[in-house]
Image 1 (cartoon, rainbow, N blue to C red):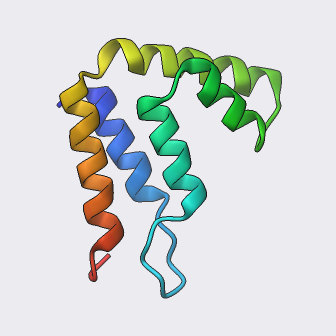
Image 2 (spheres, rainbow, N blue to C red):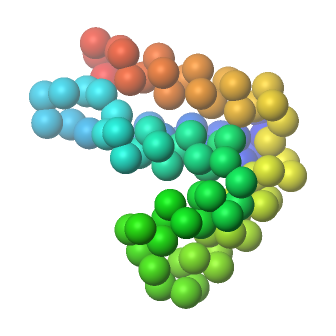
Image 3 (cartoon, one colour):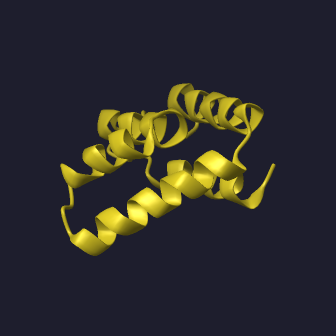
Length: 92
């Protein structure tokens, strides 16, 4: 897997909730789904709901465009499978 794919997986793993419920926060799931499968505009609009700093928004769009260019459909599917496995893991 490419570096960008590994970073997506690392980010998803770091964003797990920990208060007795090992599931991934629904907002994080939505973010990751849009990051992998949404358009740059959809992802940027989603991020704006949490942070409307112009620099963050600009970098968000650049990162999404980069991911779309670099990750293959297989990379995206692998990242999605990994996140699903982490979400249901009893040992998270």
